[in-house]
Image (cartoon, rainbow, N blue to C red; front, side, top):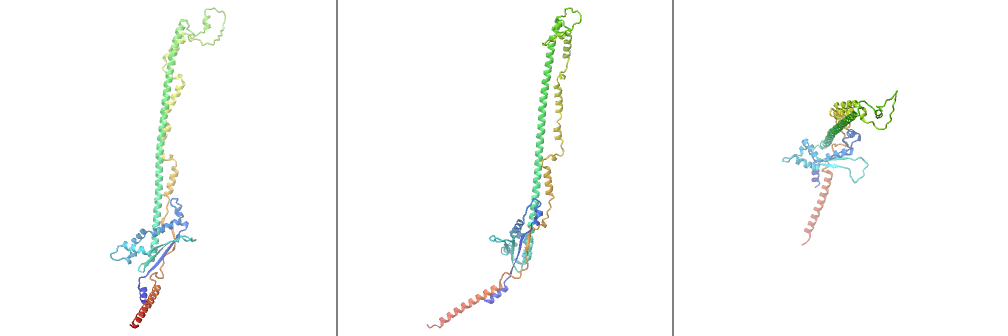
Length: 388
């Protein structure tokens, strides 16, 4: 039995085990990425991303699909590559993580252990897969960074377009309000002008009627030149010498005392008048205001603006942010996401079969079997030698 165990121990296929351990990178290694203000990644988060890539079934399948020659020794006839990979993946890989039940003072880590047969280059497989996973995370971070930058640029573009639409709407509203205010003011001024002219015309016609009446009275009294009531009463009296008369009267002298000549002259002038505008200063003021309303300079300035983006509120800050985002250039290939604390190296001895243990167990089993056989033979001999 010992010989059989020894033969099996030395002839059975050998399996070896290697492992790689990763620890968080230094903060300075991720400073350039975090300084962008778009993508924030702590060393712990970077380690978790790499750990997820190492544990990802799809990532492992993609790696071995790119390097099928690594699993070539395990390929069997009639077996698909995916089946070969499935069998190898189930038994070969084991993730190494800190025990959550233990409070460790050291830095966190993540590791990957690979157990492989002797016809597989396990060191190349494990180190290559770790490097492939880190590079895959770098590509993912670069893609995420570009997506975030493009999304923010898109948001800025949409914000600028919204500001433009708001500006256009507010400008149109302002122009409409100014035009409406001008139209209202013009209508009110025109109404006031019309009313004033009608009022002046009525005053002139009333004045003409008053003059006609006064002319008739003056003719009846034979007053042709301007006079006063006292002068009219003493006109027949003879006065010797120079006489200076002073008349104090708090009552308005009737219009006919102006005399028919003066009254006729005023009536004729009023009848020949074609316009009464010059008699009212307000009419000239209204004409001035109407002329100013012909052209609203504020509306003309609003409509003649060429670089309207300059009037958008917040445009300078948005353009500055867009320029900063477009200027971001982070080379993901230079990102040191993790620190490889332990690389896989050639193992000194296989992990299975354990030759010494197998030989010892075989010897123990052989001894137990020999003892058991000896007991059986001893019992059989006693039964044969006992009398019937």
